Image (cartoon, rainbow, N blue to C red; front, side, top):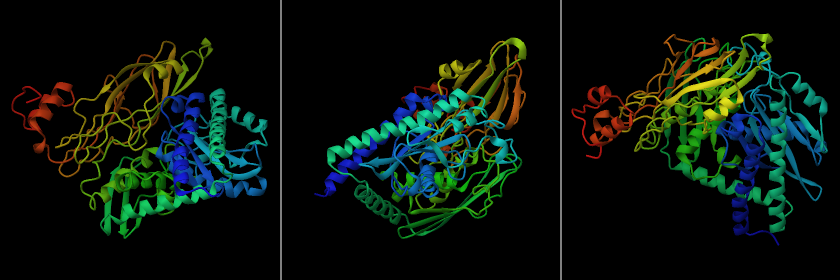
Length: 554
C-alpha cells in the first residue's frame, strides 16, 4: 500500500529531525572551533539525483544552499556505476563545493536492501588547508591551499590512506583537519541510521515518492509567495570596500507572476586578490536573502530554491572563474543579501531591513614563538565576530549578530584554550548603530594580544570600513569599522599583518543602518538606549533631539 499524503507529511517532518541529528553529531565530534562552537556547517538529505530534500536548521545559508548544487556534481562525476555501499565522497573544490578551499563537503550514498536510494551530505569549515592560510592575499587559487577534487574518501568502507597522508603533509593542523574529515563522515553515518529507522517504521524502501511530494509542495508554495510580490523591475547599487579598489555590486530584480530573476549585470570585475566569489556562493546568498523576505515559512530544499533564478556575468567578482583566488569569498558574498533586499524594498517597502555589517569579521591568527628555539608550539586560531544588523521596518536591529551567515561567535574561553592569546576586551560599541525611528544594531569592540613568548600574525578580511551600512527610509548609516592597535595606530582592513609581543589588536566592528527618520523615535526608547549605553549623550541631543534625560519608562 502506497503512503498517503498524511504519511508523507509526517515523514517530511521526521526528516527535519533526522538531518538535525546529523548536524548535531558533527558539532559534537568536530575538532575545529569554527564547527563545534560557531556552527559553521551544513547537513542535509538528497535524493538519488542529488536534489536536496531536507536541510538541518543548524548551519549557514552559504553552505546549505551551495551544497544543494554541489551534490549533483558528485552524482554526475562519480557516476551510479562507481557508487557502492560503504563509499564516502569528498571535495573542497570551490566551484563544485561551497566557494573556497577551507570548506570540505562530504557526501555518503544511502543504500537500502542493496539499492542506492539517495545521499547524505555535509559541509564544514576547517581551520587550515595549507597554502597562504585563510586570508585574501593570494593571486591564484593554487596559492590558497590544497585542492581535493571530487573523489572517494572511502571505498566500500575502507578509508583511502594515501589521501589522508597527502592532506596531513600539506596542512598546518593535520590532526584537526583530518579529524574534521572523519567527523563529517560520522555525521552522515548518523543520519543514515536515523533514516533507516524511519523507513522501517513506515515500511518504505525508496525516497522518490517522498521526494516528489516535498518538491511539488515546496515549489507550489514558493511560487505562490512570489506571485504576491508586485510585478515590476527593481534595481539597486551598493559600493563596498573590496581589496585593491572599491567594488560595485549591481542587481536588477524582475518579478513577473510567479517568476523572479536576479541579474547582477554591471557588477565589478574580478579582483586580483582573494575576495572573489564563485557563482555558486552568490546564488546561495541571493536566494537566501530573497527567500527570507518572500517565502520564509517554506522549508528549504531544491524545489523551494529553484524559482529564484540568479545570474551574474562570468568573470565578474560574483561569478569568478578558475583560477581566481577565492579564499575569503564570504567578505563580498555576505553582502549579497543587502544588495537584493535593497532592490526588493522597492516592491515590499515594509519588509526589507536596512543594510547591516553583514560580512563576518573573521580573523585568522597565527601565533608564533618569538624565539623559534624556545620549544613553544605554533598555533592557528580562528575567530568569527559579527557587527550589527540593520534596523527592521518595525524593530531595532540586532547587536553583534551574524546576518546573513547565522553563525555563532566562538566563546572567549574556547578561543583562548585553542591558542596562546588573550582577549582583553569584548563589548558592544557605543553609538555604532545607525540612528532612526528604529535604531541599527551595534557592533562590538574586541582587543586581542599574544601571551608571553609569542607574536601574532593575523589575516585581516574586513569590510564596511570605507563604506558603512546605509540606513533606509531616512535612517542614518551605521558606524564604519576600524582596524587598529590599541594605541590608535591604524592597520589595513585586509591582508596579513604582524602584532608584536607588547601590542594589542583592536577591532571596532561596524554597526547596522537605521530605519526611518531619527525624529520619529520615541523619547522613551532614546532614554532606554542612553541608560543601556547604546548611544552617547551627544547622539541623544544632536541626532535625536532629546533635551533632557529623565526616566526611560516615561
